Length: 241
Ligand SMILES: *[C@@H]1O[C@H](CO)[C@@H](O)[C@H](O)[C@H]1NC(C)=O
Ligand SMILES: *[C@@H]1O[C@H](CO)[C@@H](O)[C@H](O)[C@H]1NC(C)=O
Image 1 (cartoon, rainbow, N blue to C red):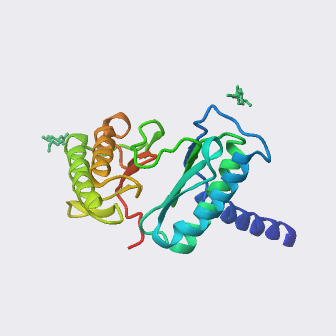
Image 2: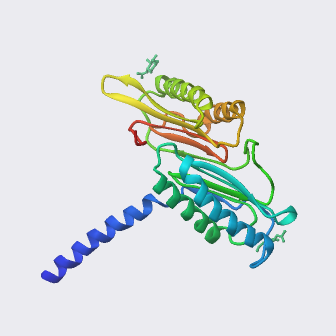
Image 3: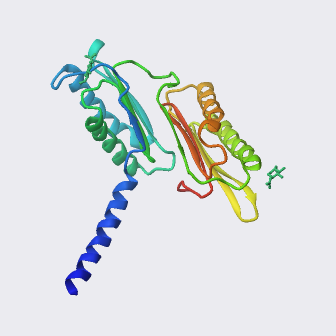
């Protein structure tokens, strides 16, 4: 009896532990480059250097970019942490992201990965300052609201107003909520990577909002997540204030 109690207790701990680990699992990734590098090649060395620089540089502002090396062997990368994420958690996320891409996209010159807390992207191609229209995914809740005819426009209103705030904010980040009725609220987020111009941030977010019908019509929560910007809404608060 004692033994079985012990086992179920450790099972509980294990379940809690697994849950904690799952929270830090990546949302999605793409190994978008067709080009490969080899171990100990100049690109590999530059990429390792780049990942170190980003994990040092990004946490203080929540965004950073860098290039290492020259010419064909140049590695370019950026990382963005969600606007409410602490410096410590931002650093952890960027470090984990670099390792995870090494596992998931071994020897690919270009790759991108997203977590709840951050995104990391690198490439041999210099991509800074351009809206990434290639790397994008959607997430949705799977449960429907009762009346999407009245709900969808509210989602659009909230995210449009947050987009207008985000591109005008030096952090390219905005969160907010909208009262739906006496007992429910809609919560939203909009954020861009710091290499974009203000106008491109706005454009990126507007495009993301226009794609909501592709994934999220009448959904209780949804996200359009790209390499340059992302939007999210939920019926519960999901950022630290
Ligand atoms: C890169 O490697 C993959 C698989 O390892 C291979 O299919 C592909 O042809 C390689 N690409 C180039 C440009 O050599
Ligand atoms: C859904 O909302 C729309 C707009 O507010 C309203 O006209 C319609 O009657 C509602 N439908 C139901 C089934 O409640």
